[in-house]
Length: 50
Image 1 (cartoon, rainbow, N blue to C red):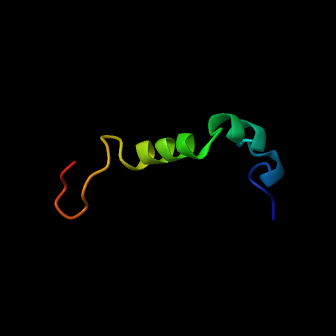
Image 2: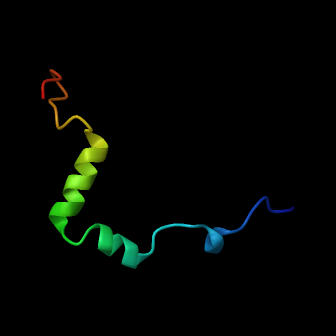
């Protein structure tokens, strides 16, 4: 069976160095993840208020 593209070793991704530069501490990482989850800010899942 022929492969359709490069294997995992050739995929572009983030290195551990790039990740540590993006998230130098827990607070920075938490803020980034919260922005991904709630772009308009955290809200109540039950009633939908912000």
